[in-house]
Amino acid sequence: MLSQALMQLVGDGIFITLVGSIAASLTTVSFLPQIVKGYRTKHMKDVSPYLMALYASGTTLWLAYGMFKDDWVIIIANALGTAFNLLLLYMKHLYRRSSS
Image 1: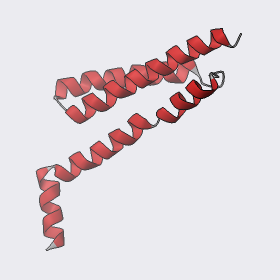
Image 2: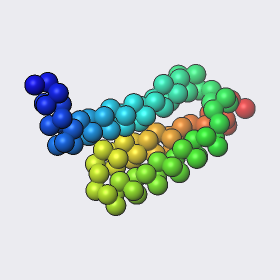
Image 3: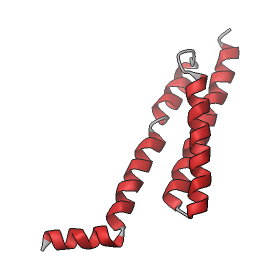
């Protein structure tokens, strides 16, 4: 009975959407601790701008992919991921000047 219900969820795509939504949520919020730490300490020296630039480029391409596929999980996660990474790049630039 349980396996039949699980197979129905998988077949309907609900389970797959749930897994994707959880994965998207975790990767999207993964940069929030760095944003909070940078804001509190005003210190971003150890954060690589190359990592952030590459990640923002990747999330921008994923955002375009999500738009082509009309997949709101991909669109929302990557729009937020891109915004968070651009914010980190801005903070890196801003706090570099203020700590000099």
